[in-house]
Length: 348
View 1 (cartoon, rainbow, N blue to C red):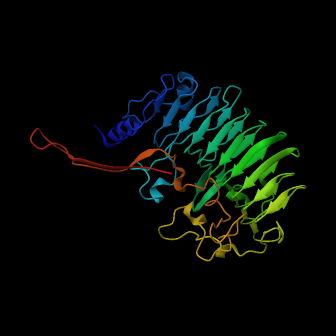
View 2: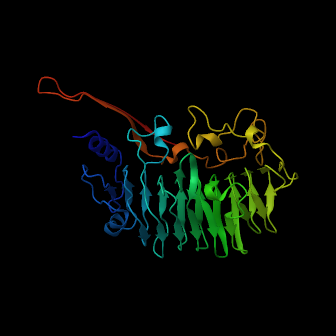
View 3: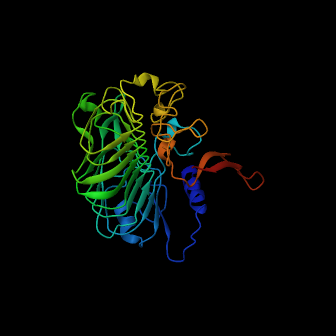
């Protein structure tokens, strides 16, 4: 059995079906692996409502999806080769665009690599967590950035995603945007006026513990807490704005907001041993440390993506067991069996 096939089979063994109806399906398009499905759409079509799809590591995309049923869709994460002790196979689960249509309410996706493709949400009750939406060019990791377009009105959670643009196109009162790196395409330049977060005039959202990497934020009657604007602009009326940091005067300096912050003093930045998403960890002495709403010396709350109720998870790993180390003896015999060593852990 090949290394990849062994890992994938072992990975599947960690999941026990506790519901007699719901099933877990393997989706893998590697030529050496036999799985239930080879494309995301085929897996959706063959699965039942409430089933789980495990989108396994592959260098090839699993394609686009039009979703019309409730599913749990889990990938392997991203930036895996940059982050130790994550997955033994460090390839991501690449997908194309996804459209959540009527019937998909209750769907949760995690750990997918959209490679600058996007999502359209036309159903209530959708969760998008720990996915990557950017694709690099030369040395710019977020040269291309995908968009989440929301047309639904209630119970949409966009959380812990890396490099994504969000557009709320309808009136709504139940959208949570938290612990994301929100961004525009890198090729637009640092002074782009394109929106990294654009909301309908009657959309009311909670926007908390995000980083606005590049682009304009346009919102009304919403709540902005514990965010950091690396560079960009802010516009809108009727917003509650507190405990945010910005490189200029975008949020002002009242209600716990800090303006004219030197961003090189905030984050650890890129460097040896630091992953693409690890560069946004707060450095020692950062003005964002303990700067969050409700922070106390006994219970410090930081601004930025690595604090709050749903801290950003390095490499977008779903909170499920993963094989992160594999070693085997290349050959064996009846008198000398093949020795295999594996290490497994569950990620938060």
